[in-house]
Length: 560
Image (cartoon, rainbow, N blue to C red):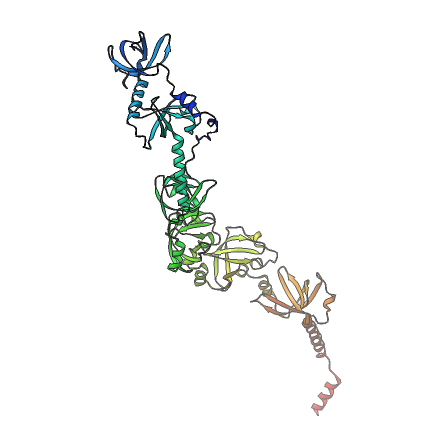
């Protein structure tokens, strides 16, 4: 916004003062307050004594007639113009500098054009009840009434320079009246007209950067300061203006709003530039296109990439690599790096564009399928342990080793067997190309307890076990540790399943062995048949030793 002058007064404390009184205070001249010609009669130390033709010598401070090197510019007998400014101990106090200013005032008034609108640059050298005594760089003295100063009454005012306008020439008292307030009023009027014109304009204006802040920067447009908020600098979104501009830079801007009450002018740089999102729509950038980008900024959740036309895209951490365990994007990319990415989302309405880096790389699952097949044995590394198993990383992919496939011991759990980082040899038992899932087994690399058991037992053997579980379709019997067998309901024979309970001892015959699938079936019905056959065989064996009546008759007939 326009410069706010912290010294501006509301003027109320001066409104009750009569202007003529102020003039009288400023312009009244003591009877000695006039220039006169004197002769230097003596120089003693810091004082110069001058005969001012009043039958008495006046005193002038030597510093008033000393050059910048400290040398006196007068000597005894010289004639100089002085002014009597007071009296001390009966001797007039003289001033050479004030006399010079008086002379210059007379010259200025004599040459002044009443019809001119003159502005002067002055320095305040003293003050009184009515206002401020000022001089310009030529030594001309002016008076600025308090009501025309728009300044706070402070000792800090002395020595400060201001711009002011001449508004009255008092020839009678040889004084020049100036007003700083008129300058400020004119500037405000001009700025108000300019701001009003700017607020109604949609033109692109050239401005100059005056001040850069954390929230934006102030830009001067024809003498009026407007704020360009950091969100109005680039189509990329909020940016740090100090990284793009410096004070004094010329920038194109457009007025986007003006708050008349707060006198706040809001400007926009991006509104003065072509909308790159429209260019995207016109140029036909589509999802699936591959583009070159520069990595601008990396965050823990991803990276912002520059498309080179004031548009920024977002590369999410999940789109950087096929590795699902990526922790820090900086392990894969770096700021300032140029990379090729695939456009995966364009939303011109929301001004959002998302890209993917991993889509331009071969999927690890596809690489895995080329190298491995079901039945292969591979070494992997434990990456995650869960209640249901462990994830094993083989190459760039992870397979699941379920608890039941980790060991033949049904009570074993992966989290009790391994720790993250362990190297494990596993067998690939399933590859699902649709779901891109891999199932692994460790126990299949070892002889199963059933395999060991069937080396010592065969179909028909009579075995004893304990009921471990009862289902609708049959009974599971534990023969040894981790060796279970199933008795199907139809193989229970005369045994009533409802009479069985877990833990009961049961006897049955081995009815079926499937080493490939590690399955054993028992049969009580078969056991019964085997026992019946055994009894019959025993009876038949005993009868072979006895001679029956039929045998004797048969024998006699054969003899005849």
